[in-house]
Image (cartoon, rainbow, N blue to C red; front, top):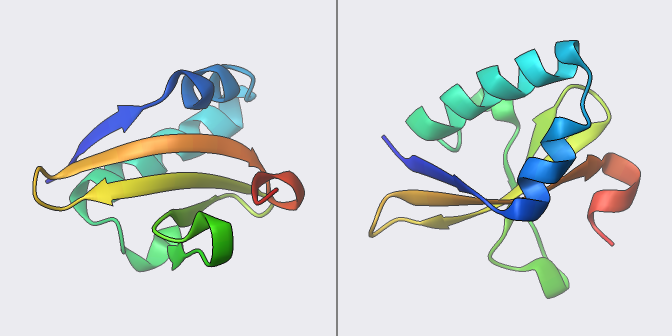
Length: 88
């Protein structure tokens, strides 16, 4: 089991979600803590300047970014945003 450690930016973005999306995010967090590569998360490693960071899906059009510290079993939750903007 991993410990989730959200950044301030991540928390601020999550507060802006509607209730339905917040419920979906909570479910995704539970999966992420158990297995960051669970098929339902659709986790993908990023390339280029975001190398070493992973993305996961929150619904159809939103994404979350995270980094994994496998030694300490910590997942740092970095950003939440629309799919069209998160990779910029």
